Image 1: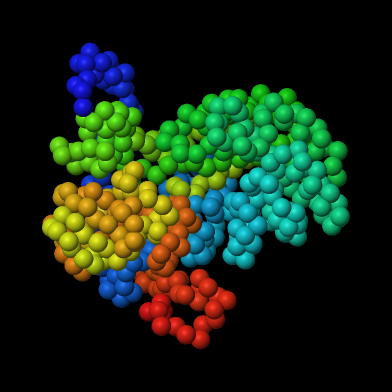
Image 2: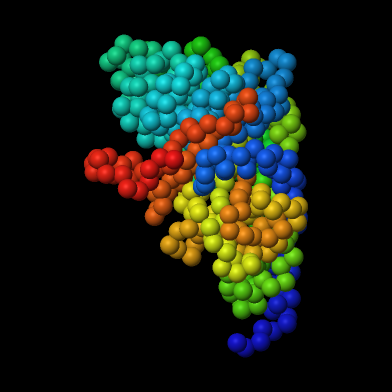
Length: 469
């Protein structure tokens, strides 16, 4: 390859010098310490129920719920948290959230039916392109459900269905701004709210009570603050006859210190790879086992800023609704794996594949991989792969532990959000779920998938493979 002019390299370096901002270099040993404090119970779960397994830890969920609700508690402001089912609709987790007294945010008829069956007293139904069947289900439970409307057409459809069943139902409307990027797929523009509210006021069966917006992946409060500042004047412009009752500011609150980025996958790293100055994939030879971490504003500080902005910009007396999903679910579920084969001292294969994550996520981002059998607070470089018949089945480029040997139990912590809900039926079965309850007892709450589960049309008269443990 022809050498690159040093002046060009210098210019590129200057251009990309801010690429890592606002990331900082470090690693996640704090999370590892938390895991190792409870390694005994995790090893017991692996011993009793086998691996791979999702381990749902109800005490961790309840602690996260308490932290979130305490952060958003303020005298003179009514706040209501609705758990976003899409983050993780596992039955054991959803039931625990209902027991904790939260409301539900359902984005489909399936999720709505689950919320109803689990006994949630307050539910919002959101999402685009709702079917008539989904709206009719909401109407049958209008005492518990508020429908977040996504368009003018959906308003008209809901009014028609509600009139047919002679039912009155509460509703909100989802709003978007150009600053919402991909999220402009949802809802109507802020500028259309006066017309929407005026049209809704002529409908006898749809009672418009509030507005909703949503931003995702929020590590700082800034997006909420900007949107609330824009929302206030719009709400002042026009209100429905009974006035506004709530403003739902959605979800997107990010957990702290449980994932990081690989430094060689920044724009700078990718460019160096394209120029032949770094490996095409995987870590460079001089990698120092550090990662790029995103600064995440603690939820207490974020909540203070959001509530200040809400009270400054939104008309007085409105309730503030929230839709946390990832923030609540992520710390509550872990993956336990067993080392099935050690090819070389730094290359091992586990008994579970990354279909359990849903996609090849760990090729692009880092979560600590922890050897519970040989624990250590330092990483050793290695490659740990899953059991799928594909090379894109990576658990990590390093492991916290003294080494790797067959039979070791590995943990990937904090996998409660968008993991079980995205898990793929690719090659291997979906694994069992074990629950650790508030009394410290372990229970299998969902068995490993069997052939009959995947192909019910074959019947269950012959079960050579996939017997329940």
